[in-house]
Length: 363
Image (cartoon, rainbow, N blue to C red; front, side, top):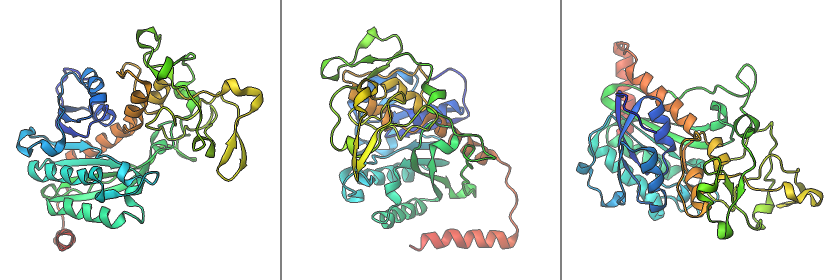
């Protein structure tokens, strides 16, 4: 997805995944010069879609900070499973949770103008809020003024109800407190939410996965337009998994088995708490969203190709990504605030801002 156009800001991407966050920043005019992810299942996808970016496939733990090129910004989403409300909630006590501190190390040692990190809402839950606040203090200690916000992708024009926490830090010497963009979609007078019909309604019927959920490869008319097959577990049937054409999609999952149902499906019926059933008269209508449909809901264009042997790896790459359109909006907001002419602070304002910043250093 890279091009030869000269860009304003050079970026380093950590925990890059398939590149949803990177693509959004690239679309906003940034140049991703170096990326890192040690998950072998997604590296072919990243290298194909970002041919001009050097991808380092080592674990971040094994990378010395001096090996990373100097950049204007560092972006990335450290693994979120440890902080997820749907997971074991081990947070910083889990090996993956501690990777957040490796992210802090890279920022401390390289001192970019800004950084952006993304994680699940569970990171600010009651269970983890103290650890989260400790993380913010770590960013403060290494010289950054930090803002964070829980955003819903649907509020910014994505056809998906997806809430995630975004953390943006601006280097303290730049005297900027980042202001998150305000929602553009929702109730009047905002624009109406974007529906599933608008983003996947024109796609033809996809192919079923091959046996053992192997991909169909070049047999696909639309790249990656194939869907996972198999039984629906009791966990799956504990919730409604259908939303209609005129509705937002549910959060895209990082799993083929748990992918939500296509909006053509007949409504499910609730039997009781944690118990739903399909319409026995229309069982053929129930199929999971395809890999390509999931990608579109996440904002990936059709020319962004996903490479995998088993379909589950395709769903995993897409479900773990940051929605491309939301990434682009945040990238634009960061750029505009970095470039906005600074107003000279009055003596009283300067004193207050200095006291506020020093206060963060005392903890």
